[in-house]
Image (cartoon, rainbow over all chains, first blue to last red; front, side, top):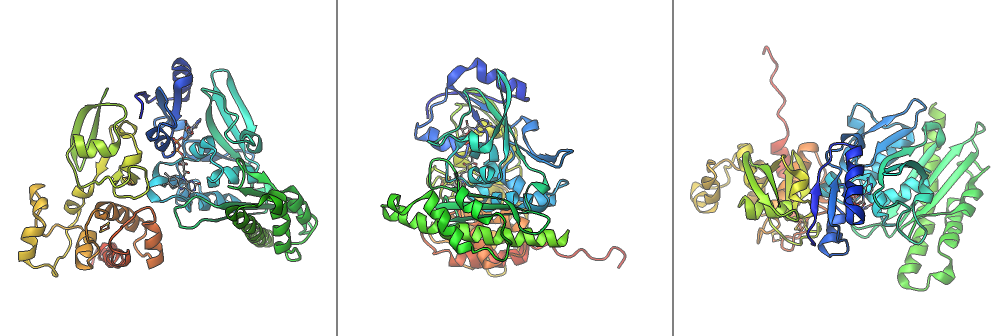
Amino acid sequence: MKPFSFHSPRGLGEAVDLLERHGPGAQVIAGGQTLLLAMKERLARPSALVSLAEVADLRGWRYTDSGALEIGAATTYAALAEAELTGVPLRGWHTEIAAVAGDLADRPVRTMGTIGGALCAADPRFDMVTLVVALDAELDTVGAGGGRTIRAAEFFDPVGGTVLRPGEILTTVRFRPQDGFSGVAFEKFRYRVFDAALVSAVCALRLGADGAVADARVTVGAVHPAPVLATTAADRLVGGTPTAVDTVEIGLVAADEVLPAEQATTSVRRYQRELIGVLVGRAIARSHERAHTTTAGS
Amino acid sequence: MQTMTLTINGTEVTAEVDERTLLLEFIRDVAGYTGTHNGCLEARCGCCAVEVDGDIVKSCNVLALQVAGRSVTTVEGLAPQRVAPLEHITTQSLAGVYRPLDALGAQDDDLHPLQAAFHKCHALQCGFCTPGMLMVLKDYLEDNPEPTRDEVRKAIGGNICRCTGYQHIVDAAMEAAENMRPVAAPAADG
Ligand SMILES: Cc1cc2nc3c(=O)[nH]c(=O)nc-3n(C[C@H](O)[C@H](O)[C@H](O)COP(=O)(O)OP(=O)(O)OC[C@H]3O[C@@H](n4cnc5c(N)ncnc54)[C@H](O)[C@@H]3O)c2cc1C
Ligand code: FES
Ligand code: FES
């Protein structure tokens, strides 16, 4: 590692000031699970680190008056995974966020790793990157020039990385209220439990009053530098009923859309193409099932 | 350089450190607790796992300054936490094997149930991965006292053992889980 100075601000304002004062070499450290690996290899060489560990405002989650779920960027996977045991348990399809947080990396990494750290690192194989795009989350940031709100799909640059400006801090990840979707399912494939996903896929559905799909989002991650929305596949779902949809067929539509056969020229790519079909199919089936259960139960 | 303090196994350790000092390096090189091992230095093997305020971390992937002021438990702090029955070990074998515990002021039979189970089930060969295995399993079994074998395997997904093939480690974890489960409290007024 290259030498750096280390700062532990107590509040968000102080963190923004520190980043500005230390200039372009300054970098945020949340859990450090990705950043420290990069620093050890000197792929990252910050001259100053501003730690979010003591900035209490960036941790935990709450429901707003309108029912939206706001998660602080520095909330750890471990905290999210145990959300059901807390005073503010997640409801309905929001529990899928906790399920994803509890089924990635390994226990020690989940203690330190944060949702915001994964999003800012923007590695397409990270599960939360795919999930926030899939669920059309909004991301709030703050910097020396003020704050802004960015839709998840616009936060990630299609060629890789994020649109964050130097010195800007991600503060909040906001998910739609319960009625935003009726059912959500995340699927991924990895060789071993702690490996990064080879392909991840999410289906998020909203059913209309008639029980047919009114709105659908199908998202595929880990294949391209940023998550990809499979809109043709999603459109095929709209207007259908949960039981009548051919999940296998729509999975293949998504595979053609995200990774067409002519682009799948290596064995890894061909394998990913197969996985997209299977995982999208599973995600559709599971989200349908959930949407159906939720609607039937309410 | 910055001055910082950590409480390691109940003892406060204050030192002036380079900002780049990893928690692992603070524990081993500054505080001298060499039970925490460096197996990869890239968050892959789990040999360096310790608890910080009761939560498990890989100490090679945390800066010491990130956890300044907090309490760390290493494998050396495990045994004194709870007394385990050790009928399967003869006094004779203990004398040679558990000397290091004496040095820490512990009793011969003060092994943590996990350590006792590792010994009984032959869950270690070279022992290099053992401190990390013990710490991760302690953290896990305290959360989930009634795991299945598959769940135990998943819990140690971030720990690599090159010797045992994991079978005996899972055996030991299942055995320890039984001994660690909270005993139902006796009725208050008999
Ligand atoms: C062994 C191992 C296994 C893993 N397996 C998985 C897996 O299976 N699935 C998966 O999805 N992920 C996996 N990960 C990655 C993990 O999700 C990320 O390392 C973690 O979430 C990053 O969060 P962090 O808080 O540690 O970020 P840091 O490492 O602290 O930061 C990452 C980057 O984001 C920036 N940053 C962090 N927070 C903010 C903020 N609030 N505002 C602005 N910039 C910020 C930092 O400057 C840095 O550039 C694994 C990691 C390890 C080490
Ligand atoms: S030394 Fe920390 S995980 Fe290998
Ligand atoms: S006992 Fe040798 S590495 Fe596990």
